[in-house]
Image (cartoon, rainbow, N blue to C red; front, side):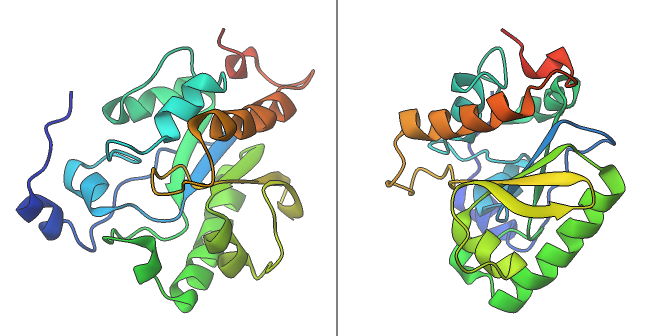
Length: 192
């Protein structure tokens, strides 16, 4: 179990980065907006208690059990990965500038072209719209591809995103999982 970082440790994490959880040919790479200070302090993605990313993965069937943030590397065995639009940690995502998000979108596209996952799932509608210049993008599959990688837009799993309940968030993650599980996809996306 992760030890809760102090306020001083979180403040010291400002501007740090967390390594991506990536490998070539994954089925789905989840892409956050950017890591928060809590995550930066502990060194794991989506680590703040109350973030619904890990529960949504489990409830949607992507993982066979609820993984803890410190188990993030186990996602690779399931054909899953994690990265961010912007690598640096901040206290709030609204601290990022539009230019920073657009530059992050370019960096993300290069990562996707390098690692070639089947799907890129961006968790954060507003960040996606700015990063990729798609002002009217909505949750769900996108027309955009990056190389051969298909793109799906998911709601932000932050506990602050009250528009999405844990159940509706998990349902949206499950829509992606069902789409990602095709006749030619590995069984690893169906861990039940």
